[in-house]
Image 1 (tube, one colour):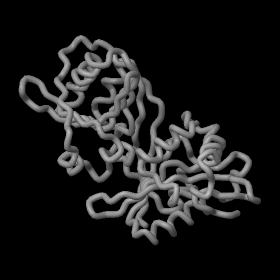
Image 2: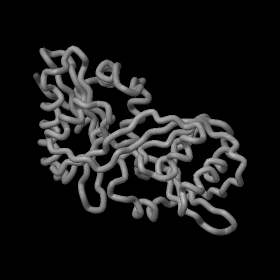
Image 3: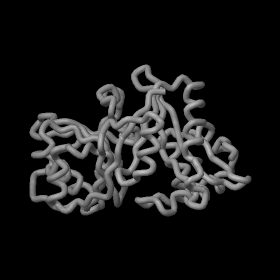
Length: 269
């Protein structure tokens, strides 16, 4: 088996390998060249640091990674690891990870993080054997905004994210950090600020990434009402929220459905 940098392949070859390796994944993961490039850029994943494996000259596996500095600590995140079905059970994933760790050490990375779907028992077991430990269990929900018949909060867009970046907790997942998502709004009612939210929004989709409310279980519907009043009945996702968050049952009661749970993990390099 040979291991190479991802950028030794053309973009077309990178996306073809990703789609073949993730074709039977537990949640939909197939991408176009445009969505693959956008995801790499948005999540600060590096084609130079990411790796592929070849078996007898044929592309067999892919692992995406990137690094950031968090409060003077160099952190890495693995944003996708998959093996083409016919090359599985050959130890390819382990060898890719071990080579990745060598690169991390050369870059001065202190800690590696990742998320793995809870039902993916083989991957979870491999990560544990390689020294990863659990941080949190996370949930991914989807639903549609509706008229909740409450008075929606006022949302005020934040132009300077630096004060809010400083508030981010150490355990916050990589994909939910402000560095990857630029929409931040403070939440108000009757001249009183109740908290803030980090989110992504388009004409037909809303993604809640950080919900910071004084009393989220009681206030979450007022927040969703504010988005409904702006966007109408578009789809809405809650991504990588801790499963024990008290507002999750409120959303489930309003028609949101669980798509998956993930185990967030860390490894000291």
